[in-house]
Image 1: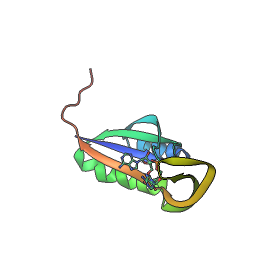
Image 2: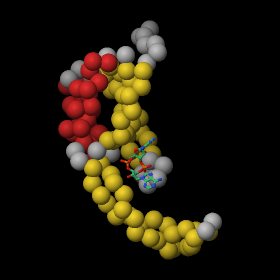
Image 3: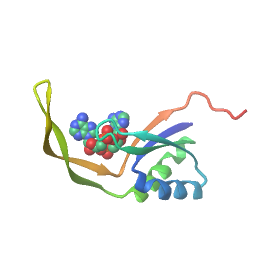
Image 4: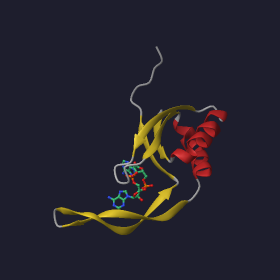
Length: 110
Ligand code: 2BA
């Protein structure tokens, strides 16, 4: 058995979960926060048989779409000091999903 962690944007959460449950995947949603942008995102936990991992990832890929580049204004840091109110434009990629697949040592329902 495998456990898939999929970090998705809030905007995609409902569509991804609906599509996964329609295909009989069990899903748990966790409200999480990205360390870099400090914005809310959603982490999905999907426990499934190894031979269904590919199908789950294809569904996530289909619902989350392509990654896109966006420009954000980051606080400007000079040396160890953050200069008040100064910002610096920076391009980051968002969208799509971040996926980890890990082995499950033991699984049971009691
Ligand atoms: P955040 O940490 O808020 O990162 C948002 C986006 O900012 C990232 O998108 C990436 O394009 C950029 N970014 C992140 N850290 C950066 C850094 N140190 N320097 C420059 N740019 C940086 P994604 O890669 O799509 O990640 C989306 C969210 O997935 C992340 O939100 C984080 O919550 C999670 N994530 C991504 N990679 C991870 C990893 N290796 N381990 C744990 N969580 C991860």
